[in-house]
Length: 208
Image 1 (cartoon, rainbow, N blue to C red):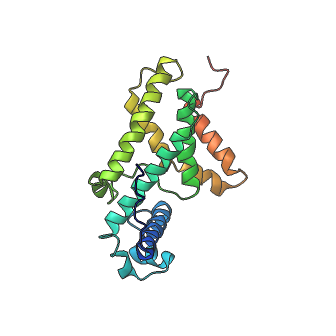
Image 2 (image 1 turned 90 degrees about the vertical axis):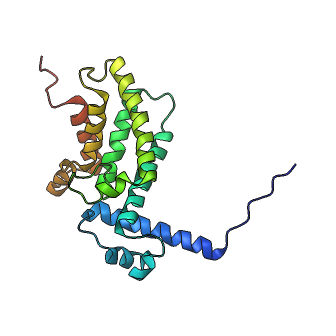
């Protein structure tokens, strides 16, 4: 028996969704560049090329819009992790996770973690999509951390949660922007050095 194809959405519905996605993308860029407190809905509307009032046809306000952008950012991270080779060692998976987080920062994308005084922290606690996406990514990373500890690649003296949130915190590390502003380094070098400093430490290889 043939399963009937789902009805095609109207052109109007497709345009409505496309505009919503454009609004979320613009909010994400501004959120990564300026932060939640500094960005405005007027700026989002101007970047998309619509009136501010049009934003309220899609989102109740700035908090809901930015929470949606954060949820999509974590979803992109999940998709990236899905694409890692199945046979990649756990320790290397964690390095790739950190590399992705750092690379996003250099393109003014959203940090995974927010400052404790951010006004968006409350709305994110109430955003089911964000919490579900973050929980899925965190569960996978925690499994990799535990495996890397068993293999002797990470310290077993540290709880998994300490290592996990240390990696997340690097997504907002000012080191990258400081090195870029100094000049003379490529983004690839900056990311490589930041990953090395995180996982390998700062000790000389000759240090006993």
